Image 1 (tube, rainbow, N blue to C red):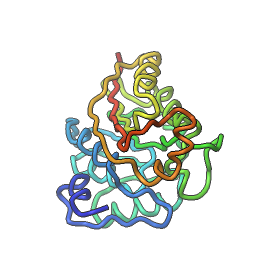
Image 2 (image 1 turned 135 degrees about the vertical axis):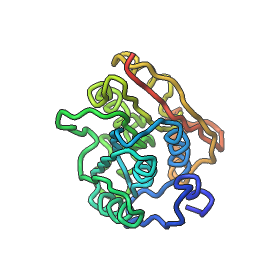
Image 3 (image 1 turned 90 degrees about the vertical axis):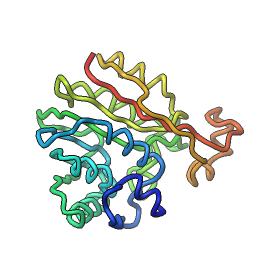
Length: 229
């Protein structure tokens, strides 16, 4: 990630994020989520949960806004990377190794944020080991998005909100509809068009044969915001 992009994610920190091999590094989707996160009115009383923290970039940003942050990831290397980055940033963040079907142990949060795996892939179920599990999400890219949509109401306090970022290739309307059926009020909070990344480019032929991707050279990223209806 170049210095300008890092500044977009962590504008107040002249720090370099550490990432062990196989850990997802901040990219365009991280920056888009960071922009949405800064619009949230977080206070020292706010409790934030990040699902799939990777390097911990967004968790650090939420902590710098004053919130109390818990970050989870299924990858041991991601958990270690996030803990190291939080320490370097001098932010107190609870980082735990948990699955995406996270058990919040009866706790509810003011804000849940997630940049989950969302790239369509040939393998079903998606890979559970190696770097690819940071982005592979089944044939339609919704293996984890759908789980989050279903679980969101139980993870949030009555005035809480969910921020979820993913590619429009996965179906923006499908996410909005699933959250609505779960009793949430969901809208597109932000969007951006970015060049196709290396993963999408590497499987472009398959994506075209599957009818997921056309001739476009860019993809649309969206941030969905949902709260209790």
